[in-house]
Each structure stands twice: as C-alpha cells, then as structure tokens.
Amino acid sequence: MSDIIAAVAAAGAEWSAAEPQRRGRALVAVADALTGAADELVPLAMSETGLSEARLRGELKRTTVQLKLFADVAVAGAFLDVRLDAADPDFVLGPRPDLRRYLVPLGPVLNFAASNFPFAFSVAGGDTASALAAGCPVLVKAHPGHPRLSDRTASIVRAALAESGMPADALGLIHGQDEGVSALRDERIAAASFTGSLRAGRALFDIAAARPRPIPFYGELGSINPVVVTAAALAERADRIATGFAASVTGSAGQLCTKPGLLFLPAGAGFPTTAFGDAGPHRLLHPGIVEGYARRRDEVLGTKGIHVLREGAVDGDVAAPTLVETDLATFDEHRDTLADEAFGPLSIIVRYDPAAALAPVLADLVEGSLTAGLHIGTGEDSPWLREVIGVLSDRAGRLLFDGWPTGVAVTPAMQHGGPWPATTNPTTTSVGTAAIGRFLRPVTFQDCPPTLLPPPLRDDNPWGVPQTRSAAGESARWGRLS
Ligand code: NAP
Image (cartoon, rainbow, N blue to C red; front, side, top):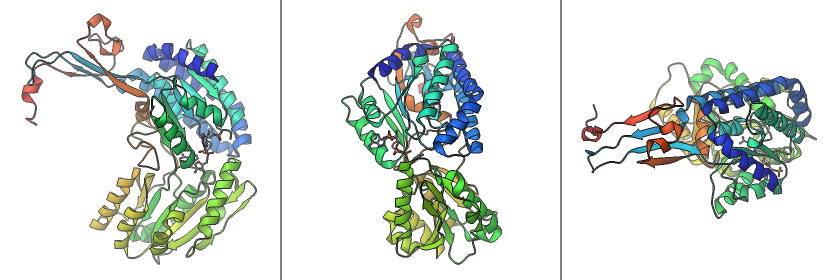
C-alpha cells in the first residue's frame, strides 16, 4: 500500500501545478469515459449493491455531471479566492506591504468511499471530484460493499487521466479497513473525507486528530432529517404530503443520508399511509447495514408507547418499509432510542399537541442534521412558525419548504453538511461547488518580486482568474459605510 501512496503523492506535484484548463480537461475526460462505460458499470453496481438500474443510471449521470461542474470550477478559478492588496505607504495603521493571498491545494486526500452511493460518493464521486479540482491527488479507500465496481471505476478513471496527458496516479485505490487506517496515519496524506456511520466516522476523526501532524477530516455521518408539517398544510394537501413522505422514506430502501427519519404532525389530523404499503421489499446494501437496520428497527418497535402503522419486515437481506407513530411526550421520554438514525426504510411520525410545545421539544431533542423540512399552508406566517424555523435552521445545513430532502441537487448553492453529528465539520459541504474549499489552504505572498509570483497572483493574470483588489488609499475611507 505504501507504494500506492507514494505514487499518488508523487503525481500530486504535476497535478497541482497544472494549469486550470489541463485539470478541467482531464476531469471532463474522466466524466466522458465513465459515461461511455455505463453499460458495463451499471450492471456491475446492480449486482453488488441491489440498487435498481434506474437509480444507478441516474446516479452515474449525477456523478459525471458533478465531474464536469468541477471542471468548470477549476477553470473559472474563483475558488482560488485571490486577494491582492497593493502596497500602501499611506495605510491608516502605518505603511502596508504588497500582500497577495490565494488558496493552494492541501496535498494528497484520502477519500473513504460510501456504501450507499456506489458512483456519486465513491471512487469518482463528489469528494474525489472536488479534491481533484482543488489540485489534490486522491487515494480512495474502497467500500467493501462494491469492491469490483470500485476496481473497475478506478481503472477507467486512471486510463482517462493518462489519455488526457495527466498522471494516472492522481487517483489511487486501496481496499481493507486496516489499510484505510494505515493510510490515514500516513504522513503523506494531508486531508481525509468520509461518508458513513457515526461510529466509524468518529473513530477515524480521532485518528486524524491524534496524528503527530493532525490533518483535517471531513466526515459526513448520521442524520435524522426532521420534517414538521403544520395543521394548515395538512388541511390543504394531506394526500400529497403523505405520498411525498412515503416516496422519500422508501426510495433506495431508505438507505440515504437525507431520508426523513422523523415527521412531526399535528395530533388528531388525518394522514393516509397507504403509499407506504405500495413500496415493496428491497435488498439492503450489505450485511453491516442489514444488521444495523434490523437492530435499530427492533429497538424502535420495542419502545413503550410506539404504535405500529406499517410493520414491514427484515427477511434475510431484504427489508419492507416500517412506519410507526408516537406522541411528543413519548418521543421526549425515549429520545435516545427514537431520535437516532435508522439507516433503512423506517420513519417515525410524532404527533404534537399543542403546537406551542413543538419548538422547545425540537430544541431539546433534535441534534444536528443534514436537513430539516417544513410543510406550511399557503401564505402561512406566525410567531410560532418563525420560532420553529429558527430552531430547525439552527440544527440543519439545509432547510426545505414544502419539499423532501432526498435527491440532493449538485449545484453552487447546495449545502450538504450540518452541525454534529451530521458532520465532523459544520463549516463546509460535501455536495456542491463549495465542497472544493475543504481541500485548500490560504497562503499570502508578501512583497514577492513579480517574476517569482505564482500565476494567479500576477498582475498580468495569465490564468484569467478573478482577483479582488484593494487599492492604496482605501483605508482612509473605511467605516464610512456608504
Ligand atoms: P461504515 O460502517 O461507517 O463504513 C464506512 C467506511 O469506514 C468503510 O470503508 C469501512 O471500512 C470503514 N470503517 C468502518 N469501521 C471502521 C473502523 N472501526 N475503523 C476504520 N475504518 C472503519 O458505513 P457503511 O458500511 O456505509 O454503513 C453503515 C452505516 O453508516 C449505516 O447504517 C448508516 O448509519 C451510515 N451511513 C451514513 C451515510 C451518510 O451519508 N451519512 C451514508 C452511508 C452510511 P470496512 O468496511 O472495510 O471496515
């Protein structure tokens, strides 16, 4: 494995120094190669994960679109956040030197692939695309749930990199838990990304922090994704909300980090659950998830005060959706059991009454989440609603109105992260263009001779990147605010 890390680290010099256009072209070549191999990759993914062909074809498309988006990001250069402060003899605090700041790649990134997105969060997924776009070579720790797909994807990516004139070793692949831990401890690794369980993510985060030279560890862990429905929304469109909820919980057998795990409904209002019955049994991704889901489902079903609406079942590696209901007081009492993620097709309806009791309970009982949702009546507004919005937005990375959290758009304004335990670092995202910032660090060149400046910091700006300039003399006007 050390050879693989050495090769990835060695490729980093050429990869990071490459002009944005070269890096961008290489990412597009990778995307096109994966698209061209779809008829080989999708059946392989189906056999290893049990996910449907439609889901996997859509996910592969998302993966290639993501690579192309990051190709554009690399070329546009705004991610470099170039700031040029002109030397200023009249600076208000005394003479200011010439200061030029930009962001540079951290170095080799170790990416722990996820089980539940064998394309979009695996070998060529979002963590890899954003790290490569940042200028970092990537070592992927394959998820054991799809080892052959990981090998095949890596060889396609490496061949496409080489064909585009870039080093194939800008991407390397390893297998095995011990190998993943050793790589995380390796001095040549400069940052790590992870999507998976709270337990494993926390263990790896601690290893990253305990290294002699600690490194950033970006873990995307468990998320409960609470959704609140108001009485007005339910009166307007209970059927539509119920159908959307069932689709969001049961799609991909609930094995999505954004699955709504808690639905808060006003007490007494009708809520049809027939759509849950329409979703049939579905194979789960791998034995670890079967075991974890069956255990969590048993814990929830065994909780006093839980009323079963749809029992579902776990039969071998196949699960049918389970839906249960309880009230706010029971939820409050059994918070540790009920407000913990069940990774699979299970959700809990919590009936609230009176409405005024909801916000304090949410504040006490709901930990950090990737998302939170609200379904409200047309034009609805009240101090109570604003209080609920405030509580949810304090705890979630993305607040959705009248929508469902599964199906994460890959786009500049997306936020896919949140306060602990949703992620180990709430200041960033693992989906969307801002994800690139995880793999960069700032450096300022002070009074550097122009001929020695890196291209993005030069006045002639050969890469054509956005440069934010602070002219001499500006400090005398600071604070005028107009
Ligand atoms: P996982 O068990 O956390 O495994 C993810 C990765 O971490 C794998 O590469 C695994 O390698 C490694 N790993 C696990 N335990 C480790 C340890 N003690 N030390 C070092 N490495 C370790 O995740 P999973 O198999 O995908 O699914 C299990 C659970 O993860 C789910 O039930 C769910 O709760 C959560 N999950 C969350 C998300 C999300 O997006 N937030 C996505 C998927 C899963 P090995 O298997 O080779 O040991």
